[in-house]
Amino acid sequence: MKGFTHARLACGCRVSFREGEGGSPVTVVIDVKSPVCTVPIHVRALPLFDYREALRPATRPLPLEEEEFEEEG
Image 1 (cartoon, rainbow, N blue to C red):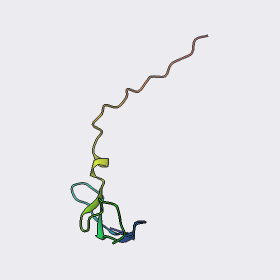
Image 2: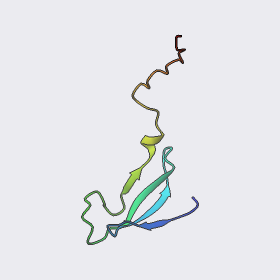
Image 3: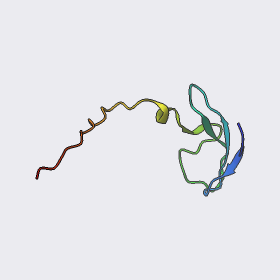
Protein backbone atom coordinates (compact mmCIF):
# COMPACT_ATOMS: atom_id res chain seq x y z
CA MET A 1 0.00 0.00 0.00
CA LYS A 2 1.14 3.51 -0.74
CA GLY A 3 0.28 6.67 1.16
CA PHE A 4 -1.00 7.07 4.68
CA THR A 5 -0.54 4.33 7.26
CA HIS A 6 -2.21 6.03 10.27
CA ALA A 7 -4.75 8.76 10.96
CA ARG A 8 -6.46 10.35 13.95
CA LEU A 9 -10.25 10.68 13.99
CA ALA A 10 -12.17 13.66 15.42
CA CYS A 11 -13.14 11.57 18.46
CA GLY A 12 -9.43 11.08 19.27
CA CYS A 13 -9.12 7.45 18.17
CA ARG A 14 -6.11 6.47 16.06
CA VAL A 15 -6.70 4.25 13.02
CA SER A 16 -4.38 2.34 10.72
CA PHE A 17 -4.86 1.27 7.12
CA ARG A 18 -4.09 -2.31 6.18
CA GLU A 19 -4.26 -4.42 3.05
CA GLY A 20 -7.78 -5.63 2.48
CA GLU A 21 -8.84 -9.26 2.29
CA GLY A 22 -11.15 -11.05 -0.08
CA GLY A 23 -11.27 -8.36 -2.74
CA SER A 24 -11.41 -5.42 -0.35
CA PRO A 25 -8.84 -2.74 -1.31
CA VAL A 26 -8.23 -1.47 2.23
CA THR A 27 -9.26 -2.20 5.81
CA VAL A 28 -9.36 0.54 8.46
CA VAL A 29 -8.60 -0.75 11.96
CA ILE A 30 -8.82 1.09 15.29
CA ASP A 31 -5.26 1.07 16.66
CA VAL A 32 -5.81 3.11 19.80
CA LYS A 33 -9.23 3.96 21.23
CA SER A 34 -9.32 7.37 22.83
CA PRO A 35 -10.39 7.43 26.49
CA VAL A 36 -12.83 10.26 25.67
CA CYS A 37 -14.36 8.53 22.60
CA THR A 38 -18.10 7.91 22.97
CA VAL A 39 -18.59 6.00 19.69
CA PRO A 40 -19.54 2.41 20.65
CA ILE A 41 -18.40 0.86 17.34
CA HIS A 42 -14.82 2.02 17.92
CA VAL A 43 -13.25 -1.11 19.41
CA ARG A 44 -9.46 -1.46 19.53
CA ALA A 45 -8.00 -3.94 17.01
CA LEU A 46 -11.29 -4.39 15.12
CA PRO A 47 -11.97 -3.17 11.56
CA LEU A 48 -13.96 0.01 11.31
CA PHE A 49 -14.80 0.04 7.60
CA ASP A 50 -14.83 -2.79 5.11
CA TYR A 51 -15.34 -1.84 1.48
CA ARG A 52 -16.07 -5.36 0.19
CA GLU A 53 -19.81 -4.60 -0.05
CA ALA A 54 -19.12 -1.65 -2.32
CA LEU A 55 -17.27 -3.92 -4.73
CA ARG A 56 -20.04 -6.52 -4.96
CA PRO A 57 -22.54 -6.40 -7.83
CA ALA A 58 -25.87 -4.76 -7.03
CA THR A 59 -28.51 -7.03 -5.52
CA ARG A 60 -31.40 -4.91 -6.80
CA PRO A 61 -32.32 -4.94 -10.47
CA LEU A 62 -31.20 -1.82 -12.27
CA PRO A 63 -33.87 0.27 -14.03
CA LEU A 64 -34.25 -0.43 -17.72
CA GLU A 65 -32.71 2.11 -19.99
CA GLU A 66 -35.31 4.02 -21.95
CA GLU A 67 -34.81 4.39 -25.64
CA GLU A 68 -34.72 7.86 -27.10
CA PHE A 69 -37.97 9.12 -28.52
CA GLU A 70 -38.75 11.58 -31.22
CA GLU A 71 -41.18 14.41 -30.70
CA GLU A 72 -44.09 14.61 -33.08
CA GLY A 73 -44.76 17.67 -35.20
